[in-house]
Image 1 (tube, rainbow over the protein chains, first blue to last red):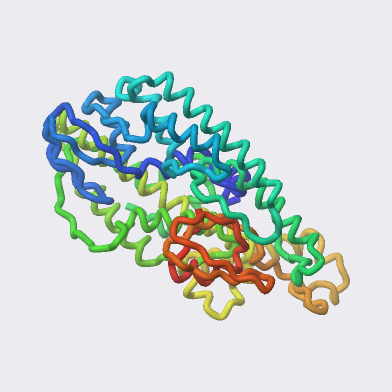
Image 2 (cartoon, rainbow over the protein chains, first blue to last red):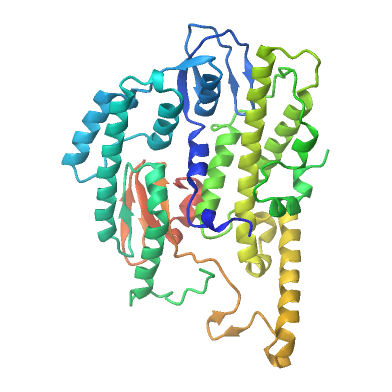
Length: 189
Length: 240
């Protein structure tokens, strides 16, 4: 009751987006704005054309009000993503991508398309990356046992996607294991 | 101005309404007054720390310790922020923007605190009887949560009694019997799998069989909760 069913097994996409809002980005303000004393920390003062570092939620807010342009992060470029895609296709492990890359890319491409060079290409590359990684997590599922499963460099959104299924599967495998001392788990789930 | 802490009922009754009592009275922001706040020196700022606490709470199968200092300090800062943003008759474009920024941040922090409390209430409802019988329950739950757990359990017992327990023979009325090793009380499943990330190098984890594995900083692993419970309390591991 305190948590609706959609929130019980994993985070909702909106919550994941909320979490990514605290990531720091660089912006170029278009107006002079004095220092703003937020609860988390102070931001500003903003003096164009000097760059400033702000949290993602603030960058998107300012962008919507035309008070800044966003400096595209290094990883959201065609070259970087092409490299990563190649790595992804050749390696069995996951390549290193920012933890919140999906949410940040989505927000930036939606709200700051003009600040991302070659946005259409970037979009396609991201889609390819996502599909390759999803295929790899399916392979990981086949290796799942009641021990441990390493999955370095997965991003939060990807973990969240597989979380409900993996946790259920893990639990069932654990219960089927004859060595398991605590088979009759007496919990509500 | 009513305080968030007194109103656990509001949390439950307004599932889709993200505004607490506070927002109904503070709807006019006109001018932001820059208040130089005490700069508390945490390694992580408090919002980040509470965010981690929220994520841990959502992912762990049992109720974790209540972060009393964090929540109370953030509530104080919230109240201070809201009080200091005055009504003013001069609203021009620039002030409007700054006040929108303040308002957005206040909403974000409120949402964070609410989500943290909600995640805890969910587990309190699931394990009310078990939690109230723990020896250190006062550490784990805040005073308001203890009151909540007690009233919830009473309501549940009353409702069950009315519905069917009174129709059973008196010897079957107890709701917390032990039968061999099995107890009727619902307890958290500590064998549940969790995704976690290691924050320090060279962590040795003892898995349930006679296996030990070393992990490095930054490793993301799916493990049983029981194996990382202690590391989580120490802070060398975070759930994601």
